[in-house]
Image (cartoon, rainbow, N blue to C red; front, side, top):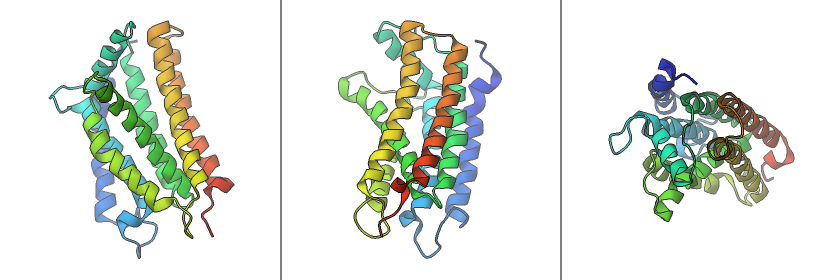
Length: 240
């Protein structure tokens, strides 16, 4: 599949979108659910903060990582695939579609849902948590740094843990523990689809690059759908 200008430059556009989001988060009240509640205690605002954190994460993955490498995450994938005996020849369009469909579309939609469906905010946080684990694991097993690991560890873990502490518990107004399990389950499922599709493509050659890309669009739609369904189910009801 041909690599286009957009494939190599979407991350810079995304960084600009992230700056716009940062302005609305920190300098306006438009992304707050309750002005009487501080931003850091507003689960809705924190959901949007998750979206911003992922734009920053994208910059480390595809912009410039801590080693100074540009477009580093695809190189990390190629290195990991090579260690497993695969080709590592993943089309650039795959990375473009994964991030545009998820970070530009699915994540903001989940964040917006969080105003009336707080479980959607936890689903978004769970996506960050599982992603952070996938970046941490290579460090633990000795594979080494993968582009995006620093932002995942420094931003994702503290933000996600705080959201879980703030939003889940037995107290009135919080979501029950079963809601957290559902949110994490959705995050795990979507990452299984993402990573499983790449593994089957790289190691097995199970389908074409076009099919691999189409699966990522389906996965983003799956995340949106499951987030909406969970948020509107009994799992999304706060304790009374």
